[in-house]
Length: 174
Image (cartoon, rainbow, N blue to C red; front, top):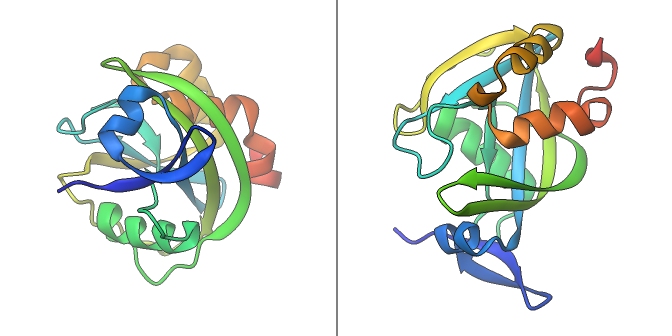
């Protein structure tokens, strides 16, 4: 199934097929959701079948809105599709932009709406086509893990923690 996402082509936002967006390194819209349980954040390990960054640890949900889909609606939809998390309304935190090589001649050049869910009673039912594992980790331990084994984590998670932690986590940054 061809998924069209919002990408800028010659300065105009247009629907572009998702894989082509990454192969061409086009600047495009994205959504990231962080799920917090007190000072811990939920991580997912991307399924090995993903076409880029398979098997790497990422924040709870990172995705692209479909053409015409609002960021919040996308965040709610993908939390359910990837992690089986429903009944939560993510709170908008900020919009950030980054560019990162994700391997296979692909580039993520994203304008990302970042959302936060704060809940202590979330039950995760991971979709194995999207997620091979998940776990909770404190932000302090996550920072230490990334420093020790950066190759185990997605480029965007490293960028978020290095450059945007205060915007995303506020008082949770420790």
